[in-house]
Length: 467
View 1: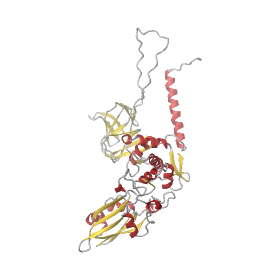
View 2: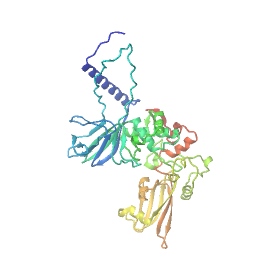
View 3: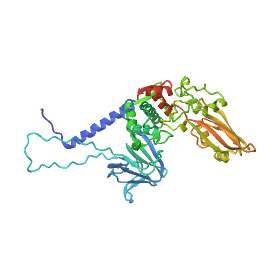
View 4: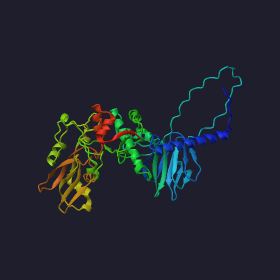
């Protein structure tokens, strides 16, 4: 064994710090050049809050500009309230812990504990060999719980999250942001967007689509307070509480895989159930996107589905038919997401329209234009006072009582004066229908399709690449 040079303790700390900074810089440069470096996502968990409560499963450290850091013990509840100049953090009894003019960051406390001095028994027996060290038990990760109800669809309170939490004061209220590494973020997304019992290849397709969607959102929202939120408006994100081994496996087996078209990340939108045909971006958004075209979610020879409907009579037959299409999977998803019937009273429709539209008594409801999926993008409502045309798929769904989709036909049931009393809406699908059909991906996976083939079917002309 050669000579060993001892380095003073203070210098050792400096070298460690310099090494840490160099590693961070290298990782940042790697990520900036689009390679497989770390990618942090900023996820908005809550907005416009009068009070926020957090708690750590392990020790936490609070930091903010211009004030000394504060360490708190595991399970200590932290209460955040906005002030005229920023935010104050107290314990539940109101004792102040920290006051800052700007955002407060809450992170797991990784400060190493001071080691106890070694002790040697006075009667320790002499031995030629040092005793074998017991294997170290990995420390459990520290998660940060957002106490109380969150916006996640399952309604479970006190949800734990990976990463760090920032509480941002703005306009007299508080915004809660989870900054979490991309692959960790996806573990809480794939399990929320798809059932963990879905076929693995469908889960892997979801993982790649969700990863691509997140990175594209980060590009578009770089100057915003956060990249995306945790709701279906972006991607449903449930944090640690929603994670499942099978969906985590799907994330890990597709690590860093994304979808590109012409070398650029695509807008990898998706919806629950297309109902038989996906929709094109041109019909839904008003501008063409080459990889977001309408596709049939079935094979005509297998299902016996008639040719694409071209008139209202054909659409009526289509909406009232239950063929075995890819996204009809009763074993995995509720068939009422595939085909559904809603009864809407005329008076409910009039109330939804409101006085601003001023149609009076509704006399008829007529589809004006449909996209390739059958989703209505223009709907005329005739009344005793005037007629109005509702445009855009989401606006139509809302005015008719928050329908699952705008792909429907309708029957009117009238009184003796030929005034509608109630409308029966026969519909298909759940969601906007653009991009990948999530339950359709299940059907394709059951037929033996791999995740990359599934993605290429729904997103035309794309390639699966390392990010």
